Amino acid sequence: MKNILLVAFGGAVGSVLRYLVSKWLQEASSVAFPVGTLVVNVVGCLLIGLIYGASDRWGISGDMRLLLTVGFCGGFTTFSTFMNESLSLMRADNLLSLALYASLSVGLGLVAVWAGSRI
Image 1: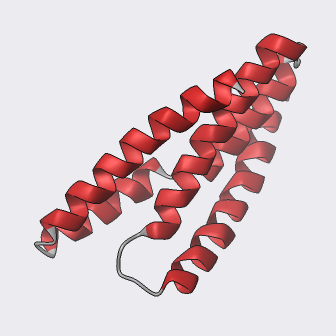
Image 2 (image 1 turned 60 degrees about the vertical axis):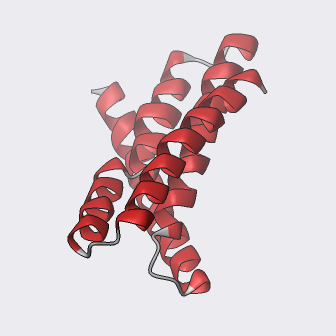
């Protein structure tokens, strides 16, 4: 039960923060490209890499790692939103934006997780 509560609390905080950050970034950019989701996903990848790297180096407890990775990062990152926005770009025949968005999300996300784990 403790693990469920840790994940639920972390997920709630991450989800609310994702909504606020993504909305703010999207409104600030004033473009149709889903920049808010892209930035949130890349930052989330960096955070999860940092957390795993720190847990190995500094002995972060299993409970804290669960709260921060599965809970917070799981709520903060937005793969289902990413896929829905990708589908919207495809349906709008905006294939260049779709290719750019998918490539940047996956490529930068992978680099961010690696960088976070190395930091």
